[in-house]
Image (cartoon, rainbow, N blue to C red; front, side, top):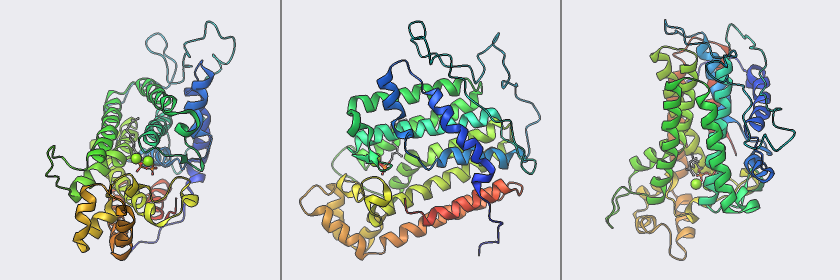
Length: 382
Ligand code: FPP
Ligand code: MG
Ligand code: MG
């Protein structure tokens, strides 16, 4: 049974930081080319859920009172231009010699650190929150091209508005600026972790395109493969962002691992719920197409669970629901099975694992907020 936790509003803990985040990202994405500006910022004009930055900021607070390594990291939060550019040096837009204005006006903004119950957030951790959101948004720009998706966040997708070429390039631009910003944190472990998750995003998307490891026709589709793919496409970015936040806070490797395990399990649960909502929620609620996965040929957890009850699903899964009537037939069998219930139960298991991990940190409001966020994930509708 769940222990009684005080109700914590994350907005009270990190609301101001999240507010700054949006303006800072806009500045980090400044480009001399107005069209690139427009496409790169397209998905930031609608309000996303900001799940990843919220987690980074709350992990920063929750781990700030956890055990630290004895060696102090170099303080790079103050200007030291002689050696390096500091983390809030304006980014050159490449056209500064020809453009008159809007170039040097890109200084990012940091609210002075607010201490809550002795919990703090470092400037580098705020910047990491921005990086995680930029990487996530880059992957959405590319994902909507791959999925030929026409809507996102209740708006026309970037590919629908500007075409595939510009959407892909804008995604690359976001990745480039995220990389530059990451380099300026001057923390090689953090760069390594975030670079790993960039590769994992692509690997996850490839695993999804292929649906099995076998190159020949004898495709063996397994639940393990689905879970590994899910870690790659969703779990890795969340897990590595959480871990990086602890790393930037100079935490011990035990604390870094707690942050990773929390993020990994939360990420898996998040995608499991996403795959369930694709069957249960309308496009209006989702703000993006519903019922899309079967049409894309994807057998997600609800279908894989339904397959255990209805073996006749196997040929449909193998041919990626390509024949006429496959999508409709599979959808009906999923609804007739316990597939959706089992998917939610598996998501709940991962939520519990995430909570078990985070409870190893000392108690704080930030920790309580992380626990509540994890619990609420199971009842989200979009
Ligand atoms: C959304 O999945 C997509 C992802 C979580 C990852 C997409 C990754 C890539 C396209 C690889 C490129 C990577 C980088 C770093 C640019 P979904 O299609 O199931 O979700 P949706 O319903 O929100 O579209
Ligand atoms: Mg998609
Ligand atoms: Mg996709």
